Image (cartoon, rainbow, N blue to C red):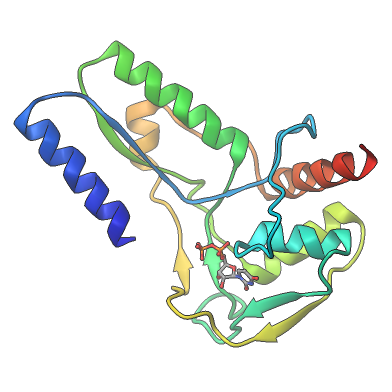
Length: 185
Ligand code: UDP
């Protein structure tokens, strides 16, 4: 987080000294794959991020999800994040570049949905897409995790006209489709 803030400060100060327009797109939690099943994420190591980890449990490569803490002050006690479909995220980049090309003004915006889902909600939703309940165990909290993180999406809408088109089920379905497409090829 600090490195991201520092990067934004460097850009802001550089632009103050010698005006130029830049766009900062703050990614929340990218998830899912291209609906074609041709572009997706396939980490070769054990994934650190939630959705690729769940995908490996669904494919049988990992035995179960470790849920990092279920005693947070959240709806079900597990961590909540703002997951955004990678195709929505990609469209945010197009809108950002179009804006930079059509005006002299830069922008700093959040790219998220404004809606947070918990770890257990993610696991259940992915299980629905994969057609079976996915095993998990409750594990200790991961150091440095915050209970909830979600985007205030108002500025992205006002400045770029950005709105997301895809929801959690689309993220899970497209991710699972990508895994199955790879398994077939
Ligand atoms: N998480 C989890 N098990 C995992 C990976 C992640 O319970 O194997 C939880 C994590 O504690 C957080 C959420 O899932 O509450 C999202 O984690 P991720 O690393 O994907 O994103 P970040 O925490 O960087 O926003």
